[in-house]
Image (cartoon, rainbow, N blue to C red; front, top):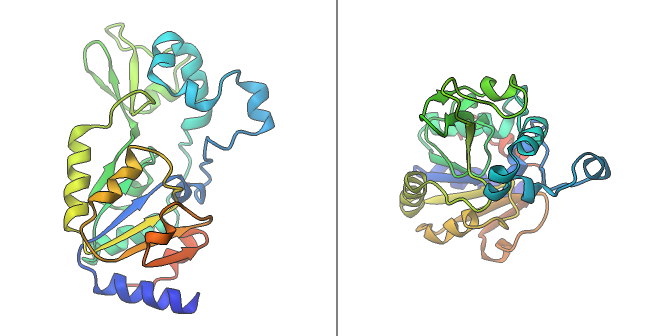
Length: 242
């Protein structure tokens, strides 16, 4: 691990356009569970699997059940940025990191101080009336009962990409542009199993790819450096200023 950390430190220090691509594993260290981990308690409480509840067709068909799950499982509003979030913000401030591309919807990268963040799956902190387009803070959903409604009567929908919905074109374009000009790609806290997000890696135009994850991924064989372990612990070990 010492040699691997030395190489990671060297590469990050040499980079001026590093891009970080992250998934759920970045936020689990902040106490936000990966909803795909379906345990026995979950099965007792919810009659549908998460992928079904978080689909657009289910939202349209059964919004009350959607919001029951959403408030309970997706709104972890007391979570704080961990060392991974903070280190990435530091790397951006010091001129090494170009941007963060994240599959997470918790807004923790922005809360940590990162400025250029491409949120592929949206954010729980942005919410919009489906009828009039009025914007609402997350509290409008967290503090409501049943289906949250706008003053105009329309349903307030979170700005999160549900299954069966396309990714935002502007966000996709920005992420692809940054990947194409990046000189270092660090991928962390993701199994790289969720598409189309994981497919974005093919746009990376640089020569060095680093994978940081607790378990193996389908891309390990294509990486130039693989580090196994908690991403906050590994990124946190990078020296200040690199």
